[in-house]
Length: 109
Image (cartoon, rainbow, N blue to C red; front, top):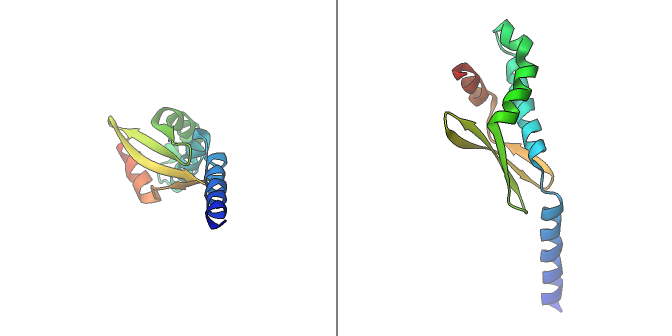
């Protein structure tokens, strides 16, 4: 009886992870919000004005995602290298970059 209950709990847990795995668009949206925060605080007026338009274009080009059924990962492609940028699990995307990393990335662009 205990094995049956444990199996049911594991099955429910796995089903929950599968159903709540965030899609690629949620990874892009999470990265966009972090970049937009960084752009809003930028001293460069041109970057601040064009930021929203540029962020949307860059997110489509630079952010790619992989779905592993139970969780998903987002990557930023920069200078030919893919860097892990976000992890999505249980319907939430956790961005691994902070504003300092984004500021550095934007300076290099």
